[in-house]
Length: 429
View 1 (cartoon, helix red, strand yellow):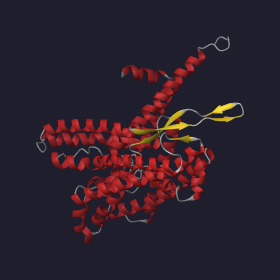
View 2 (cartoon, one colour; view 1 turned 30 degrees about the vertical axis):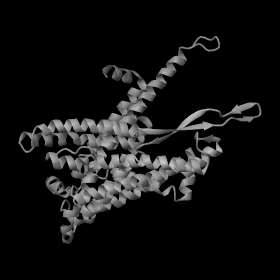
View 3 (cartoon, rainbow, N blue to C red; view 1 turned 45 degrees about the horizontal axis):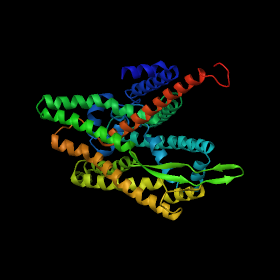
View 4 (tube, rainbow, N blue to C red; view 1 turned 180 degrees about the horizontal axis):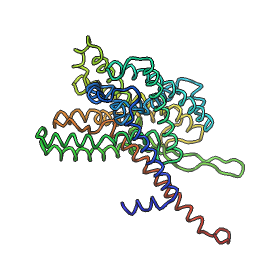
């Protein structure tokens, strides 16, 4: 491992990219602890620790890396950007203009990026208003117009600044910038969760053997998550030979990869967001407090609904990102076919049947990962450490993507070395 790290930092461009990414992540973590002007910091910890018991706020605090709990400049995190990106992705299949932009290639992608940026600005202002009102409701700030305006501007500016940092990391650093920010926030919470678990074990609240069980289950879940994230079904595709003039095209074989977990972490995010609303509303409205017992995270009603929604959104999102009819049509027009299956509609039906079986496996996996923290906490009694779920999927997915990008830079470096030292057409390199 040390030798591999030396190889990575030996490449100057790769070293600069990694250091640039670490520097940007450091700026992000510093901003997490800077409260917005007008917040009563002396009462911040106690009030928000009680408020974060609500499902929605706890879910948002996870994605902001604890910034919401500090009510800092980055309290919104990259959530507005994620919301707008998901909305645009969902609108692409039903809005012809957006679908056309996606098909236009690089220029169309620039337009979509511009729409996402402006949408993030509007979403940041809207959510900044909601969080400012929340701060006044919990007594964290004085209900004055000055605080309201300052808070909205500060929260929106912090979210837009994080969007800018994410784009700079993607362009000048390593990995996907937005994903790296989310991963950094999740990793930053691990020490506090481990410390809380250690306190529970040392005080006798939890049996020490559960600490070993926690490590074993954690490693097993990480390994299974890697397998499922990388798992795919390869559909063989054969292209027929065709002659154009004196040239012969086609006649080669390839494959069509279908991922087992095609939706990634998005189905769990959608299900968590929807299920967090009832518990949050019940905790904010006194007349609905009786409902909180049934919709509180960890209750059997909540877990059953969590599983059902995760399975539903797995199939729903897969239908948005992969259209068997369109793939079958494109294969037929390109002269390709699946061996043993007729081109056109039979091929689309064949792909649809395979996709449904893969989605079933992926949906059950995501549902199991989603409810695993609640089951483990109920059995072991550990309350401080959350195992699995959305955070683990994000960590594994971002980690794999970052490692693949580093490997690509190393391979490119090796090819450049070969080209520089080679002889072409009798010339010395």
